[in-house]
Length: 171
Image 1: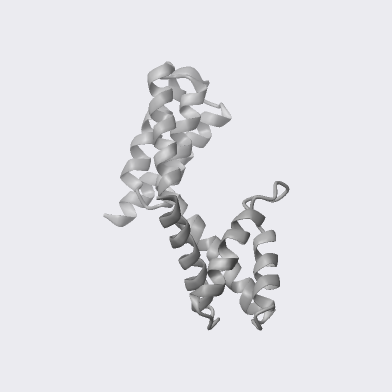
Image 2: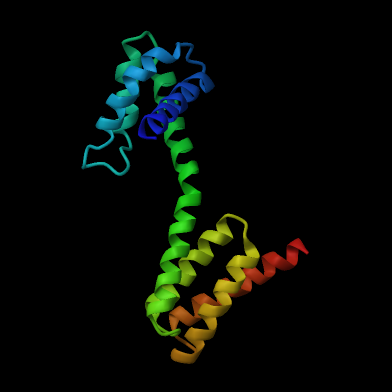
């Protein structure tokens, strides 16, 4: 399974190169891929940002690829990776909320934060009914425990109103 996953990752690098006009066979990418995955583990960067692109420029430059094309391929690979990670992030947020819902009282601030975070993600991904349901729960709990002029309650009220407006615009 690990070999299959790494093979798919290397093919994604090759396809990123192809998408920006780099015409190389997949073979150099099978050398580049494992080295890239090691380089991306450098601990002083966030998700290998800039180190990955510099590696693309250095490695592909030795094969006659322009720095601009190599940088574009590296950044495109980053965007593809992030895009493919979004469903996993959503699932993780949902699981965190489920665990907190079982362990904490309904009005606990940590539970409200988890609800609001998942609601924001769902809103950004276009799941407005899912976002609305979470925002309503968060607002109800906050309105029981916070004064009416509390910042968290005002923010929850504004988010709820914005989601309702967005839903109304779609109907």
